[in-house]
Length: 102
Image (cartoon, rainbow, N blue to C red; front, side, top):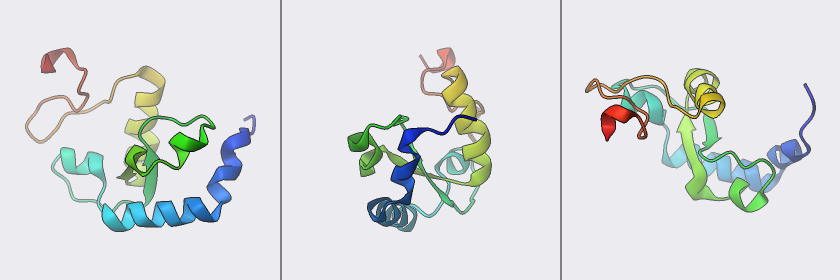
C-alpha cells in the first residue's frame, strides 16, 4: 500500500491531544449507540475524510468516536460505497441518505 503523506499528522502532539479530548468527551461508539448497543470507543474517526487537509484534520467538529469494529467495517464500507450499512434499533437504516428515510 502506498504511504500517504498526511500520515505524519497522526504523530503530532496536537492530534494526540485532540484524540484524547474526543474519546474523553464521547467515550462510547457512536454507531453502536445508534444500533442500540453500548461499546467503548477507541478510535477518533474523521467524519469527512480529510485527505491531508489540515484544517479538516484538526477540526474537532469533524470527529466521532468509534469502536474498532465499526471503524474497520461500517465506516470503511461507507467511504468505499458512499452508504452507511446497517439499521438502528428502530429498524430504520443508519444512512441518513437512504431512500427509506426520505
